Image (cartoon, rainbow, N blue to C red; front, side, top):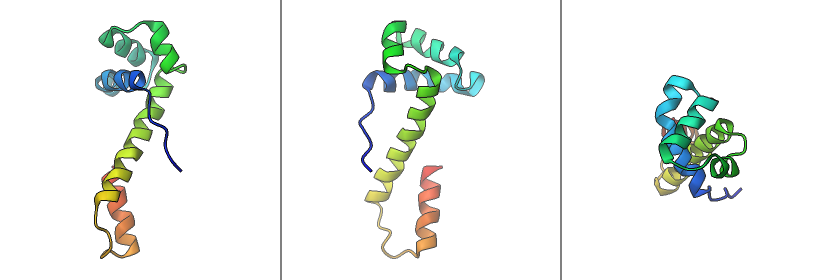
Length: 94
């Protein structure tokens, strides 16, 4: 299933939010800090992420999946057993 290209505004907010997640979780405080850090308006941020930090958390996981798929596509897994392929995919994703 193809994954839609993420909104660049949402990606900008995600990059700004990540340092705050360790302290505030995926919370309104994190979302507001990302807005403040990027200097974008509340309206633009809410247009990109209507559910605030919840949308950023979902985007974070989708981007992790996208990176895993790209890494697996470029890896030579042909000589691995199925279980080793699964283990490699899990290590890449984590």
